Every structure is written in structure tokens, then in C-alpha cells.
Image (cartoon, rainbow, N blue to C red; front, side, top):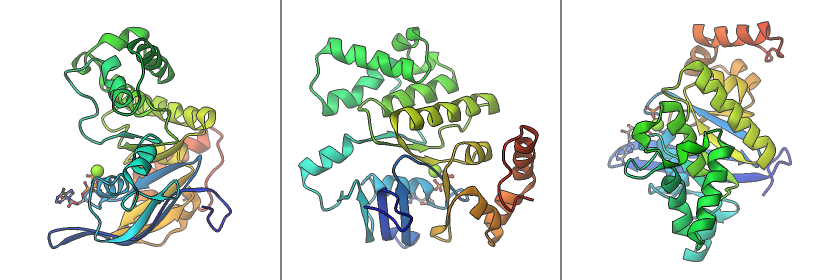
Length: 271
Ligand SMILES: Nc1ncnc2c1ncn2[C@@H]1O[C@H](COP(=O)(O)OP(=O)(O)OP(=O)(O)O)[C@@H](O)[C@H]1O
Ligand SMILES: [Mg+2]
């Protein structure tokens, strides 16, 4: 699948509608996510960002529309195809990032046990590689989530999302609750993984720094659909009250000004 810009499309959603009871959450939503990009999703709280993510993963029912991931419509796929798709994505959910009764090592091995048949020794080795990959110290392997800081939990959850060497990871608010430096480190890590592993990243975030620094493209969810989708420059030019106040608000300006101070290119149309 390629889009109009000739880019390889990894997720293609068309006309997607989701409602719970009488309450419409998403209506006739279209979306493309391209291979190898970090796509950031923003929108007001309750707009349906997590619902959309869960719908793509087949965890919420949709009332209309089609979603293809890697060219496969998960809803219509055979069990075999579904399994193949599930092995190619990793997920870090907004809530309940890790199982509290399992160590970090055991948490990372959960998807391995579910989808692969590997010897315990090999699973240990692979899990330790993931721990290293996300920048955790080796001794984190035997710790329980309650013994970790918030930032370490996010990294461990990312390690679990990477357990099966996925093509795409879905991250729902991965930097929420982290201090700005911890969040910036996490963004760096995501960018490194994109560059070294060719990973595609679907990232829901409220973090303006993440959007400005890490995301290749951004989609704004509002009015039950994707309001606008594209690079940061497009967001800055877009005429919609929420988009304007979000990207041109006081906090957004600070981020853009900080960028200038660091000598980074100023996005088109900023300020
Ligand atoms: N399983 C469900 N049953 C009924 N309503 C639901 C369900 N899941 C989500 N909703 C509703 O769908 C709407 C969108 O929720 P969602 O969690 O997607 O918001 P969000 O954009 O992720 O918000 P936040 O930024 O706060 O995480 C909310 O009104 C929520 O109450
Ligand atoms: Mg959410």
C-alpha cells in the first residue's frame, strides 16, 4: 500500500465509526500511518485517542469502516493471519503498563510465551537484550514493577512492547507522569529505535515537547475524526480553535522558542 506521496502505508483506516450505546466517539474517520515514521496523536481528553488505538488493535468493535494493518483487515482475517499481524505489533497501554506480580524479565517474556515457542534460556537471553535496548540496567531484570521509578516502568513496558521485534509499536501516553528530562530521554530512545530498527511508532501524547522533537507527522483528533494530519508546520497553520490554542498557546510558544535558542530549524509559520 502506498499513499499519494508515494510512501508505504502501514495502517490505513477509512470511514471508521465507533460508538458506545448511543454515544458516538468516532465518525467516518480516515487515517494513514506510514512505515518508519513516528506519528503523534493529539486531541482533547476524551476525544477518542485511546478508543481509536484500541479499535485498530481489534479490541473495540467498530460500527462502520475498514482498517488495514500491513495490508490485512484484522476484522476479516483468518486466525492465522491475525496471529501473524499480532506478532508484528507491540503495545504500551495508557493504563496498566506491566503485570505487578511479575518481574521485569517475566513481563517481557509474556508475549514471547504467548506467540513463540522458545527455550527458557533463549527467552532469558532475548529479554535481557530488550532490557539493554531500552536503556535499563541489567539488574532491573529481577525487579518487580513496585520497585521501579515511573521512568523505569515506561522503559520496561517499552521493552515488553518490543519483545517480538515488531514492525510497529503503539504507545499510549508513554511520557505522561515523567519529568521533562525523563520524557526527553524517552523521546530520544524512540527516535533511536526508529532509526536503528526502522520501527514505525504510533504515539498518543499530550506532551508538546514530544510532538515538536520526536514526531515526523501529527494527527489531531477532534469532532470525532482526524481533523488534520501532517507535519508540524501544517498544525501551526491550521485554522481550528482547538488546534490553534494547542499549537499556538503559551506552552507551545515556549517549546518553539526553546528550539530557536538551541539553533534548531524553526517550523514554518510558527508564531
Ligand atoms: N469501553 C467503553 N465503553 C463506553 N465508553 C467508552 C469506552 N471506552 C471509552 N469510552 C468513552 O469514549 C470516549 C473517548 O475515550 P478515550 O479514552 O478514547 O479518550 P482519550 O482521547 O484517550 O482521552 P485521554 O486523553 O484522557 O486519554 C470517552 O467519553 C470515554 O468515556
Ligand atoms: Mg487516552
